[in-house]
Image (cartoon, rainbow, N blue to C red; front, side):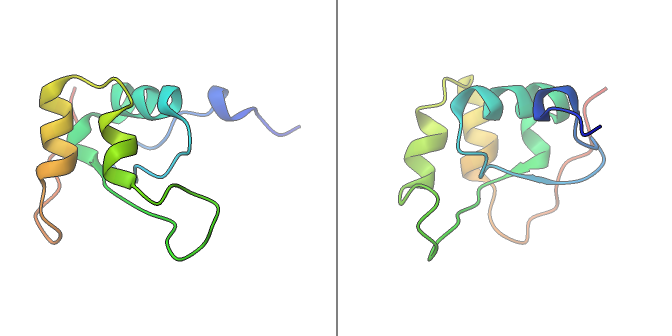
Length: 84
């Protein structure tokens, strides 16, 4: 039987993308793997996601340090080690 999404924790050693379409799930993802392992993403040009991924991340209710980490990392920058 397939597990429900909320019962499956992501691999903390892998990078995760912020395209989760749900603010609560984004907060949970950050708590599981740490903001340093979450990268800003988009479903563009597909219509299933938000047209403003930065606005979505900002409106998710994350701590300011987590916002800075997710939104401030430049593409190609090394991803931080998982938090213990």
